[in-house]
Length: 282
Image 1 (cartoon, rainbow, N blue to C red):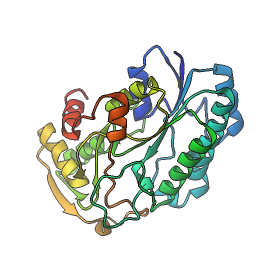
Image 2 (image 1 turned 45 degrees about the vertical axis):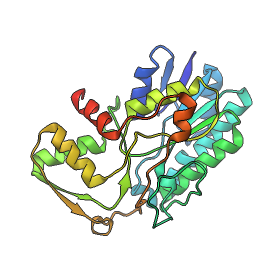
Image 3 (image 1 turned 90 degrees about the vertical axis):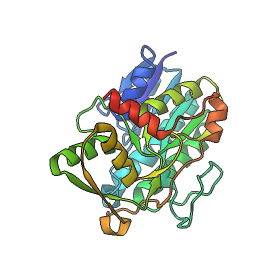
Image 4 (image 1 turned 60 degrees about the vertical axis):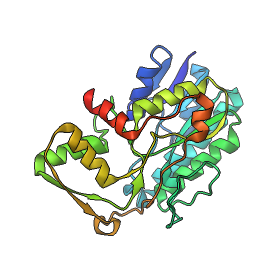
């Protein structure tokens, strides 16, 4: 089965290319720019794939506060054009979204289910939520997957992740300050790619949450990275207010992945186990 993969050079795209080797037609931004609807339709029609996977996005969360039109074009309008094309050709579409569609519930302390009302805090989150809605409305055969704290290897240069950033800063400085009041679930791109590969075969279309299991803060995540790397680094906890990022982030964005586990018959492994695997095989 031939699958067109948009965003092939990113962390998830790289993991999907390996997981679905021999089936993937990798498409980078030079081949498909989601901000160009005519090009999107042309490429998909010419390839005639059995499935289209959209792993591309404008992921510069802080920069999106200023570059709103660009971010919205890639994260919302691009997926809409892609969904319309897939629907016209009766092709299933896999679209990747984010935990940043949540955040308005300041007192949240229980994992979000797919049925919980979203409420983004940033331009990035609002654009991604709009993209979800466009895909769901335009393409009946859709898999929309929200994920969180994604990390993995990337084929394209400049595609960093939190793990590699922490290791670099820790070794350079010997100390780091990391936010300790934002709860999330670090997610291995390899594990997410595996879940997507299994879900595609089910034809159980819909909205899914897809992360590793468990929860942690970014500070605790950093501490575990350094422990596994056997690097001595002083990790100082700070608040979101102290970090003072341009864009607001959810204080709690842990996702309930029960629906996905039931669909593919495989529960997600703990984030600690996935991280240890990544650190061993970097």
